[in-house]
Length: 262
Image 1 (tube, rainbow, N blue to C red):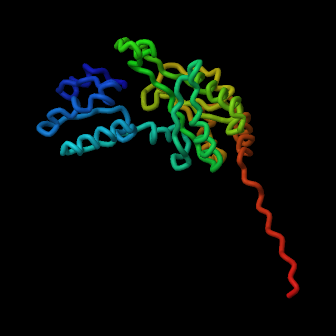
Image 2: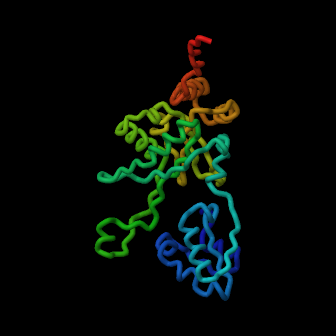
Image 3: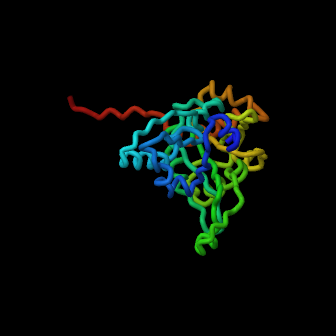
């Protein structure tokens, strides 16, 4: 968020309670306490329906007979269009988590494959770890939290490349074009376009970050818009054209006419 607790309280003239993941996921009773008698506002970053946890909170409120009113807001799911890619050409959104030595989930790979087979872009949301516990502290029941960590573009690209090397299904290559999105909606918002290989070495600066992997079908207007974020326009255009050969349908061949005695 670009606003702190004090500025929010000054703006609203009300007490603001910072609700971390633990409170939102496990403390719905506390959030909904007395909500049938007085107004309770649950403020979120982005749109309130952008997370399943918020949907669950509404279900619980309904079960208690508490009326709920939702006020919609901008979200990365629609603000991503600021990078120049057309929203209706996006497929399934995926989340990329920090890998560990023993845990490198890749179920998202199949979703990217499905998107790219039908020519759609993929929005990749990068991991945010705030108020997370280590496995040891979790096992011992100690409420000691790790320092906040925010995945950067370089880490995400390296993990994407690592899984492609493991799966070897050519869902994408190191030369597949992508667009980085940094600090979306803030005064320091920034975009960068390049290949996975190039962006694996990119310093994306302060968080938060997202990444878009281009689909097979890139419109001329999208390409023209992205030129503003590249180092070499001609190279980027060639990279896009080469990547478009992935999953390109074979040319149509008319069926042979059957011989007939009539």
